[in-house]
Image (cartoon, rainbow, N blue to C red; front, side):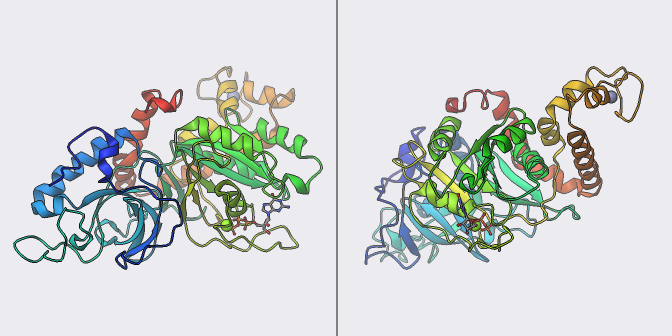
Length: 431
Ligand SMILES: Nc1nc2c(ncn2[C@@H]2O[C@H](COP(=O)(O)OP(=O)(O)OP(=O)(O)O)[C@@H](O)[C@H]2O)c(=O)[nH]1
Ligand SMILES: [Mg+2]
Ligand SMILES: [Zn+2]
């Protein structure tokens, strides 16, 4: 009887199932809940520090279950969420798993693309070392198809409110190393869009990166790049064209620098070019992309959040995981006070020079922020934008449910903050 979870060596956590090339069609012998073969858990971003969380859950779960079940529990990563069932990558396969136990009416805590989960495989799979056929006799047969028994605590998560007029939070993608804020160079205005998305991206705990797409459609890409870079202190701003391939190598190198096998999510407006960029990073036409519309806007082509493995020999050296998301319509801030401070870091910096510690930068004497606007060091648009987003954040904060906020803190925020404190940002490879 194998005991796959009693060691700190993460490679032993995956039960010895060989990793196969992505997108191999299932062999005829596969049970019907196997959707396709895929890369292994390490390639899906499994890291050694997740072992600890996993063992915690396993101890609890196996305490409550038969010893037969223990051998069938595996770590898996949620690839796509449907109503009751989720697609989950486990042991080199993508399986259809019953996610009812980890589903919740609360959009902040329910199962989400990118989550790591404890998956119980059916005994008929032979996962517990039996041939499964005799599963009924003296041994628990287990479920007839994979079941998600628990979610591991999230390291990071991209959360937004369901719209700027609502105060409900929704997790868009979980356990990200990078959030790619995708903005098309072909549409105006870009700066306000970047600031709003960046506040959420900072708040996620992952490293934000701004990606300006469709460089082939404009003549002044460099100038726009400089403008956007000025509104995104501390953030890498990259210009790419998925059509010509320009800039993909730089984006790939940036992602590979964030983490080993990084998980990156693409967020942005419909039509920004997220899925087209995803296909370029995946090296295959995996995702459907929208038809060009004359007004440059998109049509909400992508309707689901989906996780895909990037090849090791593609633009991201060593590969990684990419999560494509549907275009955000009326994206609202959610619990983003820290994120806003990061996005508008230069205003906070200027404010330290104001005469009054509680200066509202509304005309008080000795206001360094307004002085900077006067002498042109700080753009008026930037201060207005900051005020607008701050008001929105305060409005959301006054309405969001204290219990939900506390729950979210418990779920992942504390974790990512402690991870940050441990030097996560400075040297992600230390994890
Ligand atoms: N010229 C040019 N067109 C691009 C580029 N990237 C994307 N497009 C076009 O922009 C349109 C929208 O691209 P998508 O990738 O579907 O956009 P999306 O962000 O995934 O949109 P949603 O799925 O609706 O959120 C498509 O017609 C693409 O062909 C690019 O680099 N250059
Ligand atoms: Mg899309
Ligand atoms: Zn001031």
